[in-house]
Image 1 (cartoon, rainbow, N blue to C red):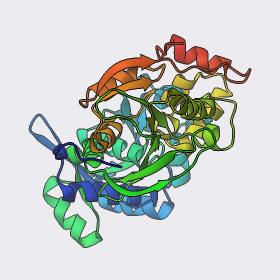
Image 2: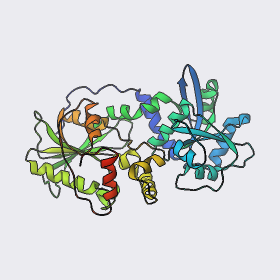
Image 3: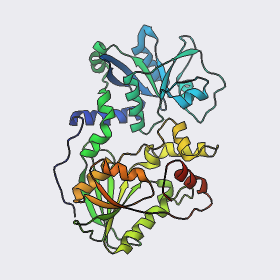
Image 4: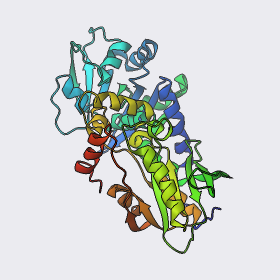
Length: 382
């Protein structure tokens, strides 16, 4: 079924760095410490990092030990969370809070400070400061781990970084490697499995699984009938949606979009492909999507809810889709979508979009505000 059109484009980071970032994501989810080094304007910044969400008192004690006498352990927060805690931010997306030395702050306090679903009665004594490049990269790592984008950091002298890593068995990451990880991982996608899977509205269907070399999540290509390679192929980019695709949530239109795309492609008589991408909640993950739902129940719209958590309104990337298409031998597509960003996203990675095919479904009473927000604020073309 697959056809390699050309050699894979070169990744931005080395294979070793790719695996290191992948391992660091797992460490962060377990509440372990990782070391991050960044450089800006010729100045190197190095920090030890723990994610705020799984933080334990044991982990915080280890971080305090690394900080030593400086006592400069800090929690890095999104500016929207800082504003809700009474701090006026400028244009920085993230800001750090350093608690006073004798404030008695523990892991639970820091986790509560990081959680935008909680209202704190009082903030500990302390001071706010800008974040370093290394801390910004650490936030990116927390996002890759699908955790709340908030981290607790301790400064590490650059010349002590390697020694600390060896004595405490910690991973060292460069900020450039973290920031380039998603593109580099997508560049290494390879087909690992293929099987015929008859579907309700498309009995002649095949599912192809692609996995990156670092062992990350698989993306799927659902190939319906036999698309012709020398003409634009009808496709849909569909981001994984557990709530809509699997259990029939009425809060979104994802389930009808997925099943509607299968039926539309089968009905076309020319075949086509659905690229099922593991980017739940516009790239923030299922747990954070449920948090966003809770914020929506408090009056936030779908985009503001993501931003209230500290994410961009849309964190999805499109290189995985482009890479899968390239390996299957398709360079020009007709795209089933209402989202113009998907067109520009694909084209930025070398896929030609010959036509946008409208793909809309009626609201159901539960998702009217959601759909209106996508139209008014995200520019969806209904």
